[in-house]
Length: 299
Image (tube, rainbow, N blue to C red):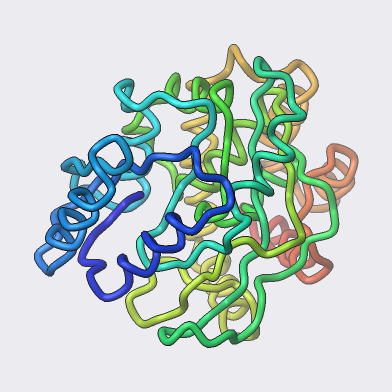
């Protein structure tokens, strides 16, 4: 768990972890310099649960993504499976058991990443909707241009963690969850997207990311595309992925080389290549946005 001034909601999240049907877990919290009552609340839970169940350490203090990656790369943390956890959400009681039900079908040496939809709630835990339902299967071509599951739903195995550790905790990426999807799909791993919501994703004014459903987020993404931010995101992810070049499968290496070439071609030549190599977003609107980005050289 990454924490930063989360006193208002963190107790409710910790209680939802304690209420999991799967009880073989422990929590490591990396606090990024909280100045509210977060550390006091964590200390109270640490005393209640005992240190084997909860440990708090100092974070790097350079943003949420690097905070999570510092935990991934901490060699003192050892387990069979790992879950990202946001401080202000609420886990459904079967969140871990559903993830492990799928992960345990994957051979230990194969990188595996589980993600799911979320149930959107307001600051009082009243339901206000769900995240978009994506129907196309996860793939490297999709991961190049889109993140489909929030980090707050992700659970992964040691083989996936090892790849993230090779890239390191200081890799310059947009977000830890998109990065995890990109890495596992690129390097021959398995990614599962569960249509069943497993996390109550709280929407409030202090959200760093927030929901991606509805008109307002769509308009925001269009703005990011037009001002070149999406292109910057793509370049950062691609630069980071170069650290794992030797682990990328031959087929995905071919897709990556083609994608790099597509970004420089005129639309008339690039567009057929996008579809040929499976570079796509999950929805029709998203794919049309991708075409617009290619037309404007904003990808």
